[in-house]
Amino acid sequence: MGILRGITIGQHYPVDSLLHRLDPRTKILGTMVYLVALLGANDPLPFLAVAAVTVFLCTISHIPWRLLSNGLRPLRYIIIFTFVLHLFVTPGGTLLGQLGRLAVYSGGVWRGAQLAFRLVLMILTTSLLTLTTSPIVLTDGLERLLAIFKPLGLPAHELAMMMTIALRFIPILIEEADKISKAQIARGADLESGSLLQRLQSMLPILVPLFISALRRADELAIAMEARCYRGGEGRSQYIELSFSRADKVALLLLSLGLVATLGNMLWSWFSNGV
Image 1 (cartoon, rainbow, N blue to C red):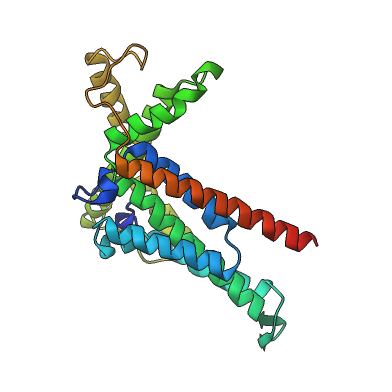
Image 2 (cartoon, helix red, strand yellow):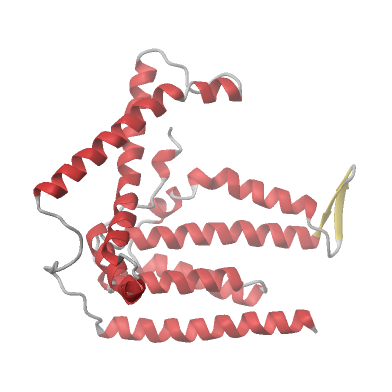
């Protein structure tokens, strides 16, 4: 359960930085544009440009790099497995070595490193969104963005509330799981040794009370919301009204230019491959 303690998604790190002061709608749209750019970057130059943007955003957020790197620990085995898998199954380029029937090509090394590094950048950026935005402000931003779909019958407020509560419960459940695992170890439970099947079976004494605790917390949250006369978003007002500052307008302009450049690069890549 020590791996779970490194998850940073859903946590908020309150410091004074430019990213913290930006409107939540700007950060949500920026994250979406960034993910499109990251998934569309296949050549070295666009990929390095996206990586440079990630380093710049992490630097100006004033969030410690150790905290940001902690979010990579739970997924480090997936990142390594992704690199090793493409190392041996992706052909192309120069033959670098061969181990029996398994051959390593330069194309496989580049593809594996590209996908592994893409996962790293994706985790860092999505963690920045929650680390620099409080859950309440994030709910307001999501609701405002989803409000354009209200004519289609989409419950914008309720959907934004559910997404934010789910994000908020991630660190709470991780902390609860850590407490339960320590209590089971104090009672003599062995959670680390044995075969894979035995270790999975040893997780049952943790998952059952964790599931019960999650249901209890959800019930308490529902009672608290009903006690405060919560009836959804219809007719509700907000204490803090969101507004775009000058920094938000500059950021949105840069995001628009980045989106145009990303789409242009993707179209050029498709055209070149088609030819």
